[in-house]
Image 1 (tube, rainbow, N blue to C red):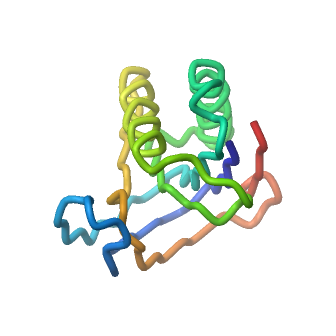
Image 2 (cartoon, one colour):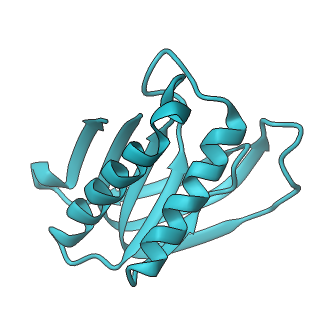
Length: 136
C-alpha cells in the first residue's frame, strides 16, 4: 500500500468520468477546507495484510493530520503510485473501513467517489512536511 499525503488549505473534487462500470452513478462537487488529503494506492497482496495495513494507514493519516491540527480528512483511491494493483472491491472496502475508523476517532472524513476520475483543486501548505509519501 502506498500513501501520498498532503496538508491542504483547501481541496475541491468533482466527478469527471466513471471508470468502473459497476460503480454507482454519482455527480459530486465538494470542497473541504483545512484538510489532510490522502491518495491511497492498494497493491496486489494487500488483502492478505489487511489488518496490519489498516493500523499503519490509520496511524499515518492521523500523524499527518495532527501535525497541523487538521480535523478534516479526504481519502481518494489513486492507482498511480505503484505497478501492481489490488482488486477494486478490496480497495473500495478498505477505504470505507479506514474512513469509518477515522470518523470514530473524531475526524470529519470524505471519500471521493470510487470508480471515478475526478477533477481536483489542491492548495497545499508550503513546508516540506505538507507533502509526504509512505510505502506501508
